[in-house]
Image (cartoon, rainbow, N blue to C red; front, top):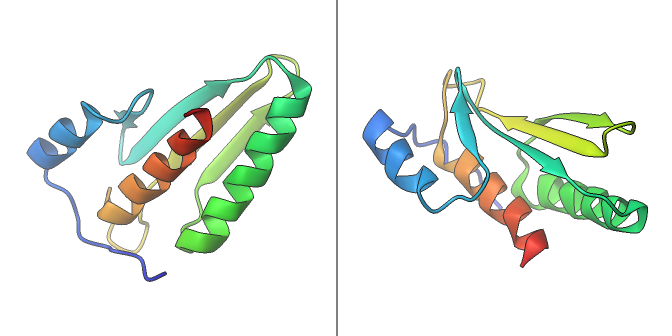
Length: 99
């Protein structure tokens, strides 16, 4: 899959975030903190995360806190210095885990 590195305007991003549960803009990134209580589900989510990264060829920053059972994902397209359609695609695909 080829990344769509089309940069989003602030207005486009605001519209997209209305339908992107849990995600918010933080500086030049899209970020979401996932809280998952069950360790088995955490493992399955991490597998899903790796699969999405491989399939989209888009590599977010990921912080996993075992004490709080939270996984924070932040994504941006460094080569263009902002949030692109590739970041949105990654976020949407990660959210599919919870459907």
